[in-house]
Amino acid sequence: MDPELSRRSPSGSAALSAEGPLLHPSKFSSFLSVPWLRSWPVWTTILSLALGSLYIYLLHKRVRGSDPANPRTSLTPEQLDKVTHEDIDVTQAVPPATHKGYAIIGGSGFLGTYLVRLLILRGETNIRVLDLHPPSPLVASDPSVSYIKTDVTSLDSIRRGLHQPFPATGTPPTVIYHTAVVIRFWERAYYAWHLSYNVNVLGTRNIIAAAKEIPGAVLIYTSSSDTVIPSTKFCRLGLDTDPRKTKVISDDDPPLSHWESHESSYARSKALAERLVVEANGQNGLKTGIIRPGSTITGPNDRLCTSTLTMARVPTFGKRFSQTNICAWDAVAAHLLLEDALGRKSGETAGQAFLVTGKGPAWSLRDVRETIRHYSRRPLIFDDVPELPIFVLAHLVELFLFVRYHALLPFYLLVGKTPRPEPRWMGEAVYLQPATLEFMADIVIDDSRARRVLGYEPQWSPEQWIKYTVEEIQSSRTHAGHGLQLKPT
Image (cartoon, rainbow, N blue to C red; front, side):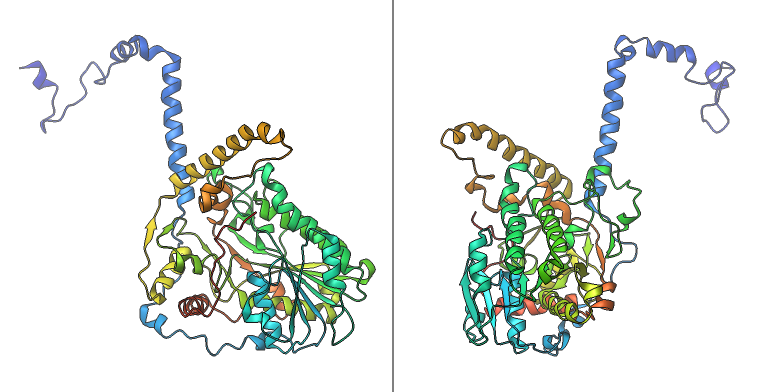
């Protein structure tokens, strides 16, 4: 019999011979005898490539995000067509008019404008806007609103704005809302820190100093949920063991460590400002409180809906991540409720911070943008961009800016200056840095404490504030601009 045939089974498949496995140890030794395969550097390289490939794959999964196990049931076009917001009365969510004197620092900004509008709607007659820029005609034309140009980085300027009496009362404002802010969410470099610190921290210190000189004053500070949301730390691949990484954020959570906190200059400066506000409570009779809206404040002129409507093409990434967001009307209502609570139950509210968010469940960025597309009268072009290349490119942009700054620094120092953190020609491309990607996280804000203590009840569901925003922008009932436009420095 042919020896080869004797080594095959009746089915024709190869079987083990009496000599053992097909790859005999002697043959394996011969295989390893190839000189380059016996080199440790070769095996080290192979292992490194294998581990590196595995890490990149896991990083891709981490930054890409995953569809939730129990996704929100998307509203059908028919359901979206039936959505209405005309029945919402924003004054029903807040206490009645107090007829005190009000100062809104940063009252020409996005949230400050909504705050002024709500005070007007509920019947306040002494409202002062303190800002570097005059308020929009929408509020400036109201006789109850006055304006004083104010620079929060100057204590003298703040004092002039806050201490000037109202003609109708002969006294300065006693309720001070501090909404002034520089939102440089994209940067974390040390050489850009001063741009956020000067306004968000030193400006807050000046406001506190001037407020303490007004008898019986109340100071309410607009902070951000970013101060208490853990950093994404993408490179950990989601292997964290901290239970807070469930991303349900509440007022009962312990303070974040420095390593856990957001790295952006914006979040870090807001956290420092919060400490100043808390420490100031009770000094010279000053009462303070903090509202932390989150995750994103939405409405006409915001950075989410409005930018989507006004950009020619919208690059989309991080669309699988979901958050609970808050309409600007709900956010400012929470401020007025805190003011009221500071008078009624100061023991529970003074020197305290309250998270607030919107009505309904968390929505993914994909759901938000598809709903915007439904209500938009013009076609919207969404360009899907893979998250991993964006993640890598963001670090390259940050590295380029770091190298550029330090290459130019010696020459600028010769004339007593320092370079700008970013070149003007980059425009809004400067946003593409690692700190910007902190939004790529699943965030659910639990504001049950604000509901229980302040009586906060949000009025606007996601589909309602989206429809409202689209209608306001398309009808030109709001001023131009949105939150993603780069402000001059």
